[in-house]
Image 1 (cartoon, chains in turn orange, green):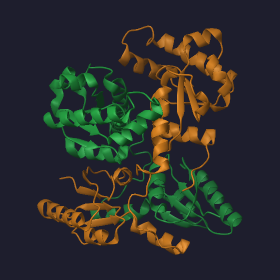
Image 2 (cartoon, helix red, strand yellow; image 1 turned 90 degrees about the horizontal axis):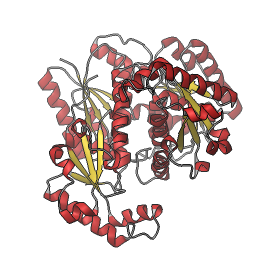
Image 3 (cartoon, chains in turn cyan, purple; image 1 turned 180 degrees about the vertical axis):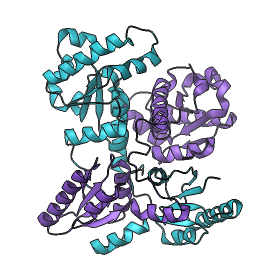
Image 4 (cartoon, helix red, strand yellow; image 1 turned 30 degrees about the vertical axis):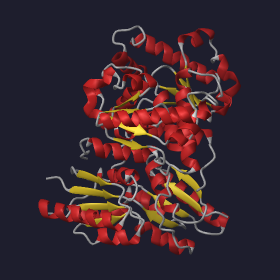
Length: 271
Length: 271
């Protein structure tokens, strides 16, 4: 049977889960993952410890527990359960306290995911902006964009724009490059004033034809020959206009977003 | 001057940054954050260590470094730099190796963010689904939805749907509840077959009028009285139809998404 892994958090546990996932994926072993979010009182800590202990009895082996509890009492309660407890919070807070010669606040809900912070409001505003400026839908307020992604249809612009907005509060517009643009051999007019914030995505024509065929099987739009034409023209245009670009073929939206942030040198966040 | 914090990763460093953020936010202190992604060779590890050492000299204090390097050689190189190095990876991998009596693979790019995994393809498919089913745009394939969010306009359905798709690969459609529905006192017809996967969002009318006024200042749509009417009717309908719902007023999309996942009891992921 797969070992059970509990993720215990006083918040959503999303960061802890993602992080635990990347550690667990280093083992050739399946795990059964149970997320226990919103453990924000000692009562909930006791019932969490109980669940962990029950799993230990039931499965005949002690579970693995990743905790990110800020409250010391709750953390101690969970740590006394019958499990391998990996404390992702206190493990790093203590050496930081020494290094900074400061005590930590042990306050819950201070992160990225708190709805009442300006940072959060920025992220929501950016999502709305990116949705309103998806696929060249609107030229309004393009001036406010932090970045404008261009590329042929289905090169990955939309999910990348939404990711940049959601994760970083980056206002990312996106604009398709279409056959009309290639015939005119010019960037869409509405983009000309914003050349400095344009970033291009390209894609391997073979991959593009696969993606487009899922949407519109057998269409001219999806044909390999047409995909080759569009990708060639788009890349030629980006080179001619000195637009930085990357190939999205084997990259995840996280990898694309990270590269774009480095290239456009957005101000680094200061916490 | 704010202490400098480096985030060193062989991938995007996004998870590490989010995690470091939540730890650093426990200190009443600003930090200058520098993310160094894609450190995937010993050469890059050496130049990373150099950057860290330069910062130490330049700033007259050793920086703080969060690392998540999988490769032991690269990790050792970075650890020898003049810094407080917090090793977010090896710290947890070693006790896990002992507990599981297994060696870890030390393989890079095994996570959530690798574009060549089925999990990743699922996420992209879910994003496309959620966009196509935003705001009741389409009744097609609603059968494929994992969840259908309902609520009045601007109650948080769209960002929550996109977040569920992007983070979890959950196909989340969303459907507005509008005055026509309240007059008919019935759920939109196209939703009736899918009652079991509907989840509601509500919002405080005062907050709703603020949000709507940003979009359409002074409109009837945004007026407090109208917001009160719509929210009352929507909540009455959700109660009548036994739809589970929550108030999004003070909740982040991460918190809303986490609650929805618990309520709809989607199968837990097994890694």
